[in-house]
Image 1: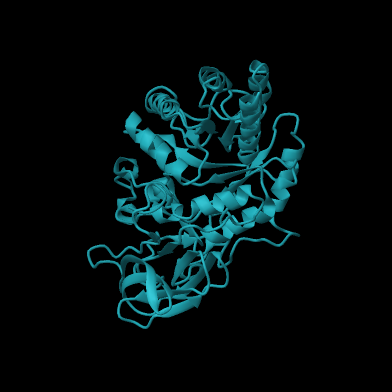
Image 2: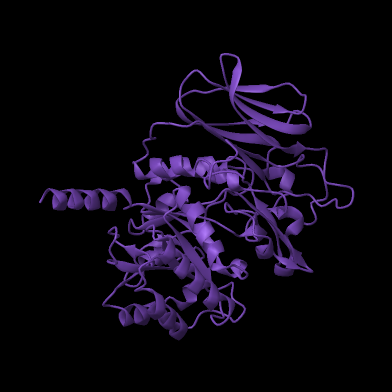
Length: 454
């Protein structure tokens, strides 16, 4: 009896702990050359960072790369056997064979939603219960398909939480007979601003207000220069990674989706760089702005951010101090903007220099006070920030010269933790004067297994 009571209590605790879950968006097409072991490695890295599962973005056609990689992903997740879950985001705009047909969607769901690694809601640990979670990237013109799709799998049940950001919240409220919740792609600020968090006009408040079942997007950055797809733009990143997590604590969404794990072409990847997954076409080659620009450091503090989210915004005690820091490699005024603008075509556009800041952005996880966080660029004067609390301390310091970057936590006049970073220079190399607006991201300790930098 005692053993049964302990198991019941443990299961209840585990269920409560994962009621709010964090997913990472994976572009399956970028993993076309993955092996099963590479899927396993990514799953293990993600779980060490506190991520509960992957959202598998799949575009048409199914046969070939997508079919093969989805199979490998589920095999890997099942073999890792760690309660890491997967669910589909049917991409209605990214496929080479047009939007998804209702028949293909039905078939794919039929093949996978009973899989143990397929994500269910509500979730009960170590059981394959609950409705199968399904999402989309756009496809609002096909929303009518989902009545029939859901009825096909009524015995299992589909928890349908699409991304139809092209339609407003009121449009979604009129279709609550079809959808179960909403996911918004509105996660980057407009122009030279931070994200709007004014309760009277906050888009996250409006999206959550549809029916309370909200999957909130969190993204650290956005820059793309892919003329083949008419995509030459950025949105302001700067402090976004930290500020967005802080706002998650205010909004308290049902789920959080990190955008993305591996979209290298849009510069918002938080997973390891996979060379074969970088766009590499004559008029859509992203290697020049992705190569040697790691983002693993954005994962360094994810366990703390995620634990705080699942603990109703209360930070857990800090056991190990950490640093995460990021910056561009030269001034916003250096180099040729190459036609890149700030904002999307449906917004007022500006020169990139109007929207972004020449600063080193730092988040320090502090165990005890007092503590000083020091930023130094080359041999220039050090710039200090006094930690104001234990836990997360975020700040930025302006570029004040050129050289390699050092970030330290200092106590009693001595460095207790040091992180180093790539050099800030005068501008891009003379061989290629295009301005790279991607971020270089570092962390310390620099050898955190799976949860930080390599």
